[in-house]
Image (tube, rainbow, N blue to C red; front, side):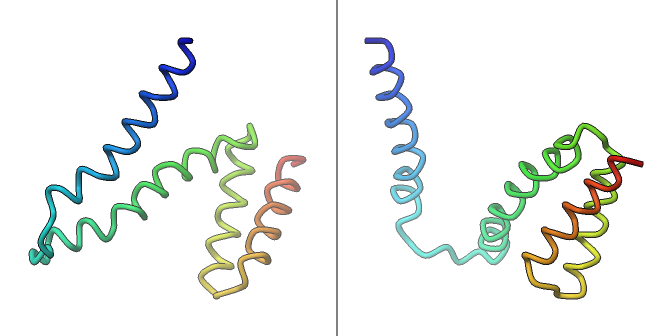
Length: 98
C-alpha cells in the first residue's frame, strides 16, 4: 500500500512542477534577461548532471580526462557524434591501461 502512496505523491509532484509555470506565466515573457536565463537552464542542468559522471565513470580520473579532451577536440572540429563518442571511449579505454 505504501508503494501506491509513493507513486501517487511522485506523480502529483511531477504534474505540479509542469503545470505551475503555466499558471504564473500566462503572458509572454518580455524581459530579455529572464528569457535568456530560461533559455540556458536546460544546458546548465544537462552539464551539471553529465560532467561529474564523465570524470568518475571509469574509476580512473586521468583516463576520463584524456577521453574528455579527445571528445572536445573532435567536437571542436565538427566531427560526427558517433566518431566523437567512439574515439573518446577508445582513448579512455586505452588510457586506462597506461
